[in-house]
Length: 313
Ligand SMILES: [Fe+2]
Image (tube, rainbow, N blue to C red; front, top):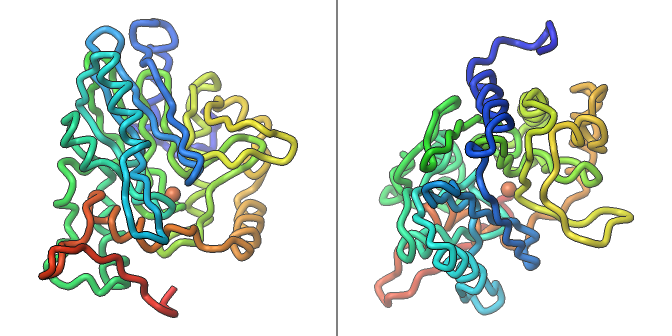
């Protein structure tokens, strides 16, 4: 660890876990990525080969915004994979409350089981967006829509594999990364080295915090496998990609490689964010995802409605 790095017991524990898994193949998870081209999102099924215990990370519910219709094509690819490999789902995890796609967590839980989990700071996101959508007092802002709330440094198990949750705010206040064996699922922090990093301009986002979270993740061992939540291709690359390593990010990430200062990053991120349009599905996504992926309560005609706040964002 560099001399100036602050003491970080959670990161140290994650580092030790990665090194153990790199030494011992039996401690490494099997990982399948499922890419949704409509939202550029990657969902993962990660499992322990010894016990078949599995976690589903960042699932997607298909949503046709023009028709206001949901469908399960993306989620059913995951169901099929889990059934074909005879996995037993222990966890359904969200790295954060996504603003670009609706989570399929309730559908997958109903089909496959598992505990729905997210970072504890989801309550801050529920507070901000509960107000924006004028959700009323029946919308609880205490994270109770989830089965488990992770704190920084929390350990969990996936069969015989070890996992550690790391709070990595910046894109939103509630972003978490999950280190399982020698692999880290880093959500919306970094993307592929040739594309850079996640935006930090949503309500509650903070570019300075994002830089610190990313530099924290980059203190994991160089060969830690990193799995990203999105890919958009990149200039000169015409295929989608979602797996890289700490070493590759440190030497080549176009926004945060070694040597990029916090102030340089913040200036770049702030300027770039000012040019980005809101994600197409931000309104439906956020109001459903803060409810753990459940649609707003149906009105007295039995229909759920998605609200759009006008001139408020
Ligand atoms: Fe996101």
